[in-house]
Image 1: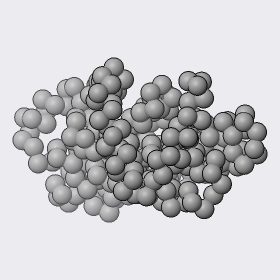
Image 2: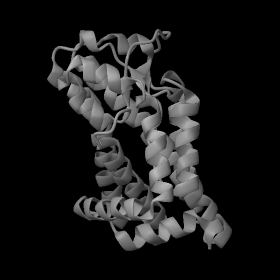
Image 3: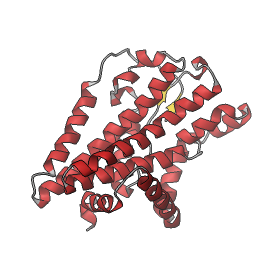
Image 4: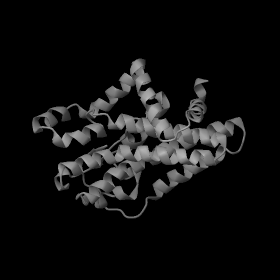
Length: 254
């Protein structure tokens, strides 16, 4: 999610923390090749959780890189272009809570925000593009992961397929025109000032309300997952493998 400005220390290059998350993701994938039930299950859990953390970094990076191209060059000094998850708004909001949401309900709610100086952006269309960049990155990741699935062994493919499905769910959730989510950020620049001020009071709580609705109102969750399945199929995802990956990921529910 994109938001407003906050001071950070400058940083350069790709963050070692991000590279470590990538290595953990690869390690999880390698575990699935060991062949034992425990190794496969552990590998898929690590692959999905670490892969989701990597995608959170890429999501926020996408907001930042588009903001930089559209006029807000302060994101460079903020360290947002380093892919360092610690540089984003809050490690708890950006990293811990999204992982917990995923473990509890299989719902990839978005994390914290990069802080954008909207006054430096060239236009309202630029502000909308900054907001849309994060969800579109999730959709792109779903497509790229789905391309990889046929090239790897089936159990690794199952983990990757579930990870790709999570990216689709993240895209759909984030693009909803709900305050606090990126979909609202797309339309926000075109709204009257009084509407924006009124909505800003409860925007931080809206994603949590959405999470509660999805957990406790199963018809809403079913509709969401139904839409996700359609989009997932459109980007080339394998629903059967994704279902297997989901079952292995939530091993304690079996």
